[in-house]
Image (cartoon, rainbow, N blue to C red; front, side):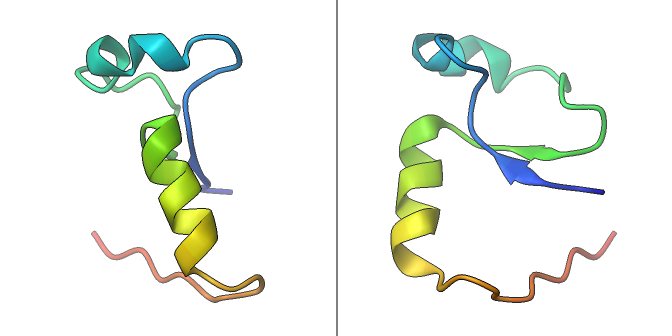
Length: 52
């Protein structure tokens, strides 16, 4: 499963650094602030299509 998620627990303050690396094993990582914005804008059960 490919997920869209924020930073690891208690490491949100390191987003400026972790966003420079591919640490998610295939997921799409955003900052915690960006994740809050996505949650506010996208209704539950919305289908998200990820293309290469």
